[in-house]
Length: 99
Image (cartoon, rainbow, N blue to C red; front, side, top):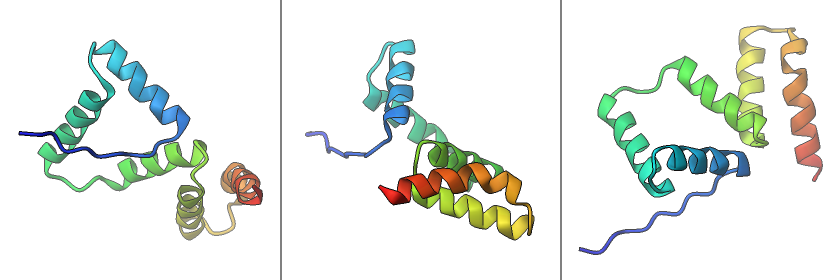
């Protein structure tokens, strides 16, 4: 049986996290990803709102503009007029969009 191949684009920060996990577990990055996917799907649950927000925050801080926009929209919906919380994401999104 031949192995199928899946390619995933990541940020440099996420790749470094995968490499670190692989080193700590004395395995490959592919094995880390496989075990994470299997563990997550074994739960059978949809991620909670908190988990989704954590993932979006991580991606936004790594420079993912779409995640920044989602977080800004979420926070604006929840706390209309609270611009201080969003200032960091707004600045980062502006810099990224200008590239």
